[in-house]
Amino acid sequence: MSADVRAIVAASGEGCQDPHIFNDHGCGFEAPGTSLFFPTPWLDFGIPLTSGITKYTLLLLIVVLLVSAFWLVTSRNAKVVPRRWQSIGELTIAFVRDQMVRPGMGKHGDRYMPLMLTLFTFILAMNVMGIIPGLQLPVTSNLAFPAVLSLIVYVLWNVVGIREHGFGGHVKAKLVPSGAPMWIMPVLVPIEFISNFVFRPVTHAVRLFATMFAGHMLLAVFAAAGFYLFNPDAGGILSVVSVGYSGMALVGFLVFTAFELFIMGLQAYVFVLLASFYIGEAIEGAH
Image (tube, rainbow, N blue to C red; front, side):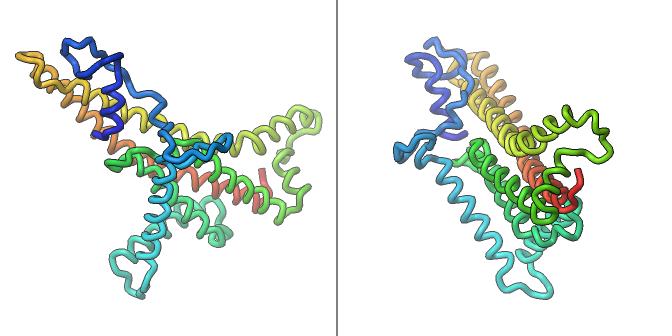
């Protein structure tokens, strides 16, 4: 259990010195709150709308180093007959190409493979930070990071569409669905504009952010509950009940950690798959 979670539990209740069940100090359980996602800045520059240097900054640096090291190791001294690390890298490339990029863009997607491959491994590493002991904070649980990645995809979607079909052709393809009667256009065009040019990048970012936020909060609740319920000094049957409850919370924590790991990979997959479909749509000019 992380020191952060213990500190939150210890702070539950005013003047509480023993944050465990069955104590005589009037300590009650207080679930972790959103303060988990707003770490205290280590260095604040005083710039409006910024948070300075925080734990997120450190985690982001770790992610960049890990992803860079992964691709350096897997691609260095490549052989015709791949060895272990080269095989892992090639399997990752094949997975992104065959399961995400080509289903969304066809053969056109091969030119976008470096971007999509970087997005997938980068997002996956940012997500996995949430279950690494001592770190335990997914970078993508801060909306700013998914928002920037979504903005990159959104800009590329527009650039590709305009390059392939011109500004008017790109906009028309997204605002005027083929086959729609003219009489409904005054209603349909504003809806399509909001859906494609406003909600699309927002939902692309919020989907990743909300899932990581909720998953980390759930794990924090199980971890804090396990710490609170563990009180072998309660005496008699209360000690047995306390340890039993704590054990149940621990099992729940481990089960949901495994499930959260699956969700972390799934969200990286969904983000890149949607990005591929968006760009593929811009290439085709279809709606």
